[in-house]
Every structure is written in C-alpha cells, then in structure tokens.
Length: 500
Image (cartoon, rainbow, N blue to C red; front, side, top):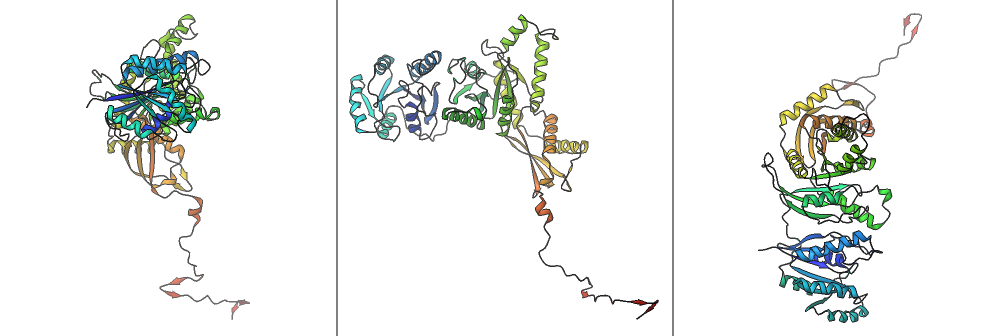
C-alpha cells in the first residue's frame, strides 16, 4: 500500500503542534504559548502507511521572529503543503477569522489537495459561537476541535481514516536497520546547514541567528555507497537538533524543552556528528558536550564546519610558522586531538556546508564507525590486551586490596562494553579504569567510540564492611585444645629462690 502524508498548516500559534501531539497520542512537537516555536517540518508516523507533518506558522510577522526566519518558516510550510497528500488547515476560534486565515485558505484551494478545516480551541461556548465564521471559507469538511482537551478529535480521526488510511501511532516505522545519526553542537555552528547538504534539499531552516532550530527533526536518508564502501550500511535516520547550551544559561522553558529534545535525540542515536566552528576551535562547552554524548553511549565523529572561512582567512593573512594551509590544517587537527583525547585515531572531518565540500564523506565515516562498533572482538585478543596493560602498569592497591582480572569479554556494542571478571569490584580505581579504557581504545582502534568497562566480582570494598567481624558470637577468653578447656595456669610466687 502506498504511503500517504498529511500536513497541518495555519498561521502562528493556532495550536498546530498541540493538535499534532493529540493525534499522535504522545508529545512529539514542542508546545509553547510563544508564537513561532515550530519552524522546521516535524514528521511522525501516524499509521503503518500514514505520516503526519507539523509545520511552522505561515506569515509570521517580524515582531514574532526575525524576518529571515519568518520567511523560511513560510517556505517550509509551503514545502509540506506541496509534498503532502492532504492538508488539515488549523484555525483559532478564540481569535476568530483573520485576513491571514483568508489568505492561507486562498493558497490552499489552489493546491488541489484534499483539505479539512480544523477549528481549534473550542473550549468555551463563546469560542464555539465564533466557529461559524470559518464556514465562509468554503471548505466542505469542517471539524470543531479542542486539541487541549480532546473535544471533537474523534470526528477528525474518522475523517483521516476514511480519506487517507488507518491511524495507528504505535505502528512500527522503518527505522529498524537504519543507523541513527544525530547532528549536535553549540548554537550557530552550522548544524542545520550540514543536515541540508546531507539530505540534498533545504528541508531545515538555516540562519545566522543562534537558536533558529528549536525542535529535533528526523529525516530518513538512503545513501549510495560505492566501493570500497559497498558492503556498508547505506540507510540512515538523521536528527537535526537545537544547539546545546550550558545549563546555567537555559533561562526559559522553551530553552529547557529544546535542550531536553536534543539530549533525547543523542540518547537514541548510534553516532553523533559533533559540529564545531573552524574559526573558534574546541571550546570548553564542546568538551562538555562530548562528555555528555559518550556518557549516553553514542559514538562521536568530529565535524569541523566553516573550514572555507579558515582557508580564506589563511590566504588573506598567512599565519607565521606555517608554510601552507595543509600544514596549518595538520596542526589544527593535532590541537583538536589534544583537547579531545577520546578521539584516538577517529577521523576528524573538515567540511564547508556553505561550499558543499567534504560533506560526502560524513555518512561513509558514520557507516565505517558503526561497523567498528558492532564488530566482534576475539576474546583471546581482548584478554591478551588486558593482561599486557596490567603487566605494563600494575593496578594500585585500594584499601589493602590489589585489583586482579581473571577474564575479559565484550558484552554489548552501544556503548562498546567490556566486562572484567575480577576479584573485587571496589579494587578498581577510577583512574585505573581510565587507563584500561585508553589502552583498549588504542589496541583495537576504537577512537570516537563510547567505551565502558564493567568490573564484575565480589561486592565493592568500603571501610564499614572491612571492619565488620566475621561472626557476632562472643569469643571465649579461654583457649581450647582437643575439645577440652584448659585450666588457668597456677600462679607461682618466689621467695628467696624457693617455691611455695
């Protein structure tokens, strides 16, 4: 059966995202009272062969968002209208019919698509009375709904199933077998630009204004892998995310939800393209983000974007000490590896989303790294590696116990987990754990891969259980021999050398 899609369109702040979440039966798009929160097109599976698209508000004024973003949001909504099989035009009964509603209705009638009118916010009788105004727009299928409280949603769902297909939000999508890749980084490093180049079209809004992307947007990509990459996976699910900030700079609920969505996308991804700005290098926030990504079990490929600016700057004013741009690039890469030690031998990709250079290597690098993550490691080789590391630098004693490893085995791929069967868990000091991780990473070429070592043995040591007696029974002050109690020795007193 052919897949079909429905787009929710309308002016800003009429409740499209709330209706989107209501139809899905879960929170997918960020809902906020501030107009212009949704900007990119968000797509979710509504049924086995049915998708639902949430779009940004058409005709956002400059006081709602920056002009460039407002215009881009409108283009995105128009793209969704063009790509969809049907449209649900959402209007606001609380505010009543507006000239912008009439303008959008005129555009929709020219589209030739199946159109239903959803008069939202029918929460009180006064709003319901205003709903009659919208019938003048001339649409045949009109539904009075409350996305907030669920009123009238059943009638809208019946229409969708009749015209487009069965609604089943729990239906499994085709993400199974796809490498889940997330593009993350600080605000305004060019994440959406990189995504657009990977997708091959301007699906995501790009602006010089930091914070343009608010929600996490997922897009499926089927890439062509030519030799020598022919045997690698070529199916990806790509997530563009909002820029992550340090927590103390998250000042609004919108910033909070955007950050949480980004962290959720990272948590569900296999590989993260961590994008940094070539003109700024690795910042302290980049280091913190890298730590968060690895903590979630995702592996990292570092993407240095805006490299064209670095090249142009070097040509205009060559830096002293460097013969050419290649030598500067090599030094730049070395400095990055010093800042992010976990990268090891992992590739650092220099790209320009603006000039579309270096982008073609991103998905190939992700596929290679994904294969490395999932490769089986020979148990004999792993144990030989661990033994060699321990011989080279024996572990320190912890509370009188020295860490001993009896056996090592790989237990999972995300994160890449090594279990060490040992004498006592608590004898593995954190610094020594890091030493083993770095050694294993070097030995097996696991640069950029999230690596975790689990110690499995006797319970962890602590001062309390070390001091506890083996038994609570009181010990007799008398000594025993062959089951008989010895009598106290007779006290002898000496007088002038004679005994009495």
